[in-house]
Amino acid sequence: MNTNPIILSGVHVEVTEALKLKVFEQLEQLFAHEPRILRVRVELECVTHATSHRGEFLARGHVELKGRTFFVSERMDDLYAAIGSLSQKLDRKIRRHSRRREADRKYAQPLGV
Image (cartoon, one colour):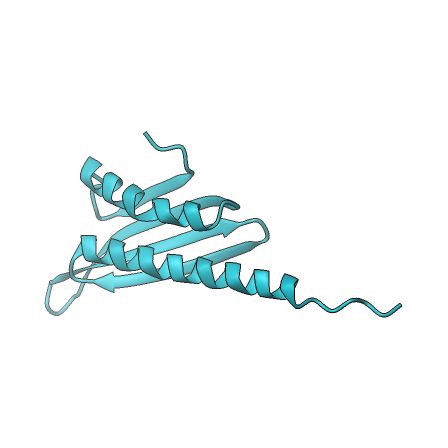
């Protein structure tokens, strides 16, 4: 099914096969942009407001690289939209990190000994 280390958990949300498939499809692009990813943890939570009794969905993502961890969260009324937005935010963050790492290598100054 999936060879990439993606850990999915739900708080007050039942993690169905459709949710798993959606999360795995959305997060596959992260591994294409950064092969050094050790683990991706996704937490899906339903938060109910005390006054309106209306539920909102909170999606949190943790991407663990060697020596670095990224954390992103997204809160929306639709769980699938929150997963898509979370995936985009994580992708932007990882691409930004990769670009900065390459720029640091490209413009490195020699040490004057």
